[in-house]
Image (cartoon, rainbow, N blue to C red; front, side, top):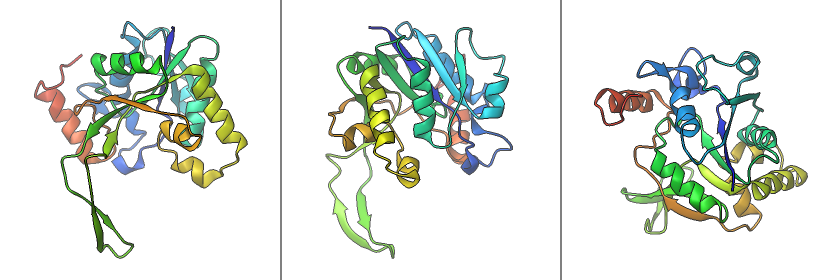
Length: 232
């Protein structure tokens, strides 16, 4: 089965506090997004890579993007950007991986695990929780301690049979769930869950950090500078 990847990088990342979109901040002497794209463009299982960017950047794609990577203007919500990316791959691949451009350290092993599972059905990488988890009310008071044995933190890339992913987005759009729901769709597995489609899990990677805040960026830079993540 041919495999493609959609890297979602059309957001602004305002929580990072950078002057421009966070996907272009410096990480080890390169734009953050360059790390994310290269992980997929250089993987032997990935045949096509699509990146969604803010419209003004998509008009003149960065010259540092690897050859063969196609760029498209993303949408207002994350789900819109994924839908655009999946549409760009239509008919070319049988399996699609969806990845957040703000996760620069997706390893080859992680990608391979998701590809293998994604050939069989929707699959997501997860990692366990080390901290005690509490449920609180709107006043910040503790209601209960939540058993963490069955809880997992979810990462990307997430893998899907291409037809399943396209159908879930089409059904979501037809269902007219509304802008509020669309904005709340933080990953594509949520669409499968809502539509009753089984989603399997694979082992995630603690190094697969998502850059959201200045603290995250500082940690990512330390990971590169310390050699924990090999410089590319």
